[in-house]
Image (cartoon, rainbow, N blue to C red; front, side, top):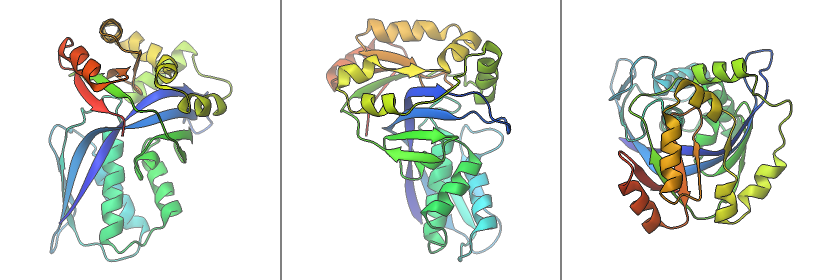
Length: 274
């Protein structure tokens, strides 16, 4: 039996370029790894196929796809696995929960198979699964570029986040389609300002939150504006939508202030930047 944690992420900055010929959007993102995490437990089986159980996840499960892709590409001796995912990260929330689960499943598979894939091979496999998966192979704060395959670890100042999730998820594909409809992509992407922001103090970092997908998410779900306003009114140094949403978050420079703010917002969660 093997246990792994799959940590959620926040996009503190997310810049999105125009779609490439293959339809994928290049990004430049300052991504923070947070304490909120799913718990994965893998048990080897004597026979049969892999099974993945994750309460609340409907349809295609990215962790199941990760195991299938690993088996198709890797050598080694990997027994059939029963994988249980105890979900704590809200589903379809812009927090990268499914991607984190897939990355954790890859770590589990590679360890149990005796390490047949090196870091570069795992990264290529992860990138084929989705743009958020490579950064979660080694979950930490990072500058992420390309279509997620270029990951540069970074340090961030100590901050506490208040999450305001929504019970109804939001489709990433729908948000990107709305972004394209609005013509709100960038002609060029420059990582230098994001590196400078990562090295700044807590207040400057929080004031620099920026997400190119935010207006598209608000276009599809206008009621999210009230959540952002609630976070700012509760004292957040900065507030934004994470990823494609619908989770909104605010940053605070101490846990006490974050807990007081969360108490005033229905369903809010407090979590630290790892």
